[in-house]
Length: 107
Image 1 (tube, rainbow, N blue to C red):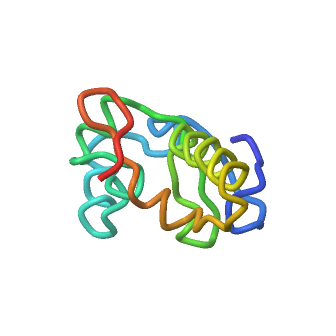
Image 2: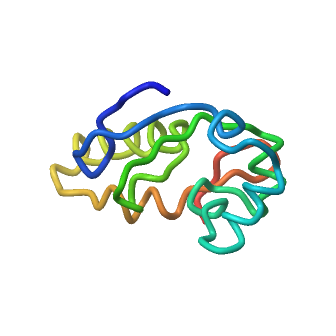
Image 3: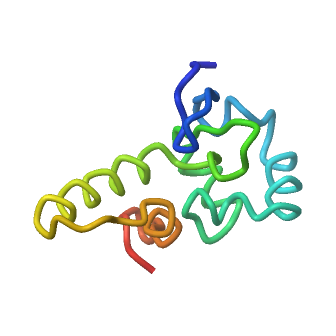
């Protein structure tokens, strides 16, 4: 797995979802316990598994995210702060992003 700096600021890992979990059943068990498919932006564990996004995580649960959603939130943050000069709650906004019908949407 690739080593990366996560949104919490600590070092973590990054890889495709299906490289992190050996099969859908194990991911489904983990997701049903911790709801991680929602943190990745998917309505169900199967949707996340089928999409096989690049994800990252660390020992801090806030870091368990879809890399594509992180990139989208960073673009919006940069535009917002440039336009308004105000601050932007990155993690709160990231929590509102999701995938629906293959597109990124704000819930």
